[in-house]
Image (cartoon, rainbow, N blue to C red; front, side):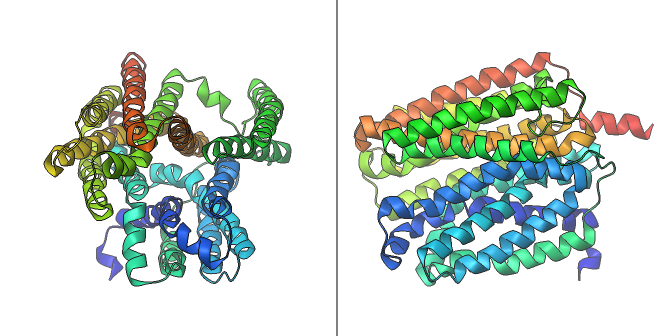
Length: 464
């Protein structure tokens, strides 16, 4: 059956399945938290750790897995990640108490970090330079749609089955992805000969673990002294960790935190643009249900339907962006995409109460289309501006930028809601998202003056 399908498509399918599962499991469980709180007899502020611990572990291990990909090969790290993630999903589905579920989610996070750390590096190996933009568009589309569609998918599953199936659904998908990956995925053309720096691994895990814990603590109203101590630990440990990475780069060793890549102006600008874009996205996505229900007075079912145009528009526009980036500078495309996104949020902010479904529908669709137009060119710039042997480092930083932006955005919503009632706070979150999106526009457009090697043209020249 698979013989008629081009090998390239099967390899891409394997990577897309894995990244969809990894991203989806960060949001899909939110809908089931009330049920899990009752079943395991824990407090709501305790049950939130089912979500938090997954995100925290991914942040702790993402750059480690990306670095391992450069050393031992992206395929090995990817297949290990799928195996751990699938096995942990089975354990989550079989969990009989809260500690078992938390332990299983930790394992799931490690597996997801391995997948996220090397997925775009694998896309770079799968697709030839002339059509790399199309491969990146599939990856960007998968991440964007998975992030936005998590609650919808969860609602559909829970309407028919129990919460266990939110995890069990990963088992057959994980097996398919593993079998395809083991048989088809390519090996690294050049694997680094350097050894694993275990001290950097420890420093990386502690630095980003403390960072995410302090941000999540703010978002979930953790005790102030706990947040303060975790932030101090982040600053203290992070200082030593950064010094070690700068030392490695100075002595021509490959650092785990890719400070060598951050010296490339277009790479750094693209990372900053990505952080701003995902901050804006989460400010909008988290506050939008409150805006639609508390401010615009729509029902929960209507709210779910109104949010649906966002991922659908991204689904349509992202592949188009993958083709456009072959002919138009990614800085221009990214700026146009973020401008549309910002415009959609501004237009929603100025909507009066009692707006119709039609008024909201096209504005939300504009946001999704803008984000889809932005993400593919930005991701392509990040990956293609790094040397091939540093694809793992670039892939890891791409994932880190997304997670940092999403975490800061979510924390921003929590801070606004703690100061202003939901009815008006959600509107100001949309305004904040629109303003941050404008920063992304400026950052993206500033890349036009930077040298960008178009993979399509590079591939053509290589063939000559």
